[in-house]
Length: 224
Image (cartoon, rainbow, N blue to C red):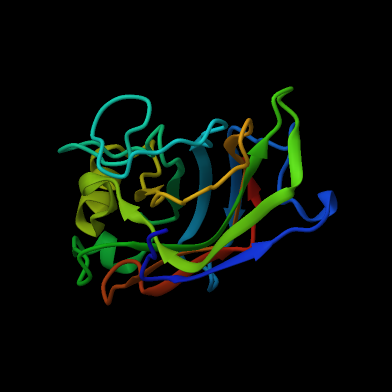
């Protein structure tokens, strides 16, 4: 199993009650409103969507194409079918009333940044398709950095879009494409990713002109 720069732990699960997410727990799209940190400041709406949870888990860490792909090609900003992941969209509100925006200023910080805690449940399916809880384990990361979706996380692009489209509250976009995990199953059983849980989402910027030194955060949780 490859490690990411974020802190990663694995927890073995002895009972069904500890599995993070099971059948019926998936949420295709969830939105959360985050108030402005200060009165009159910029507020945010965060959208958790585009989840990919490979139920039959057989990733190819080197593949750029196909059902097992884990690598993205040029200008491909999505979680992959082999390794799975999710997307995060942010809409920023009240930007146009900020003094720096009204004065025609641009950001002093180039990129918005996003982080989240993640927990992925893995294990094995019996031949009848049921999940064998005795094989379950959870791979956790704390405050893992999300990947920017092309230029859509660039601060000055957001400002330009807010000026160009006055009826739209544009904001940055991110995604997570997970690294592959090794899942070893007894003969006759099939590796599976049973669920995904995302918590403690943070979007931040350190800007002196428009957005301020601001962090928008939500504990979640988001499930898939």
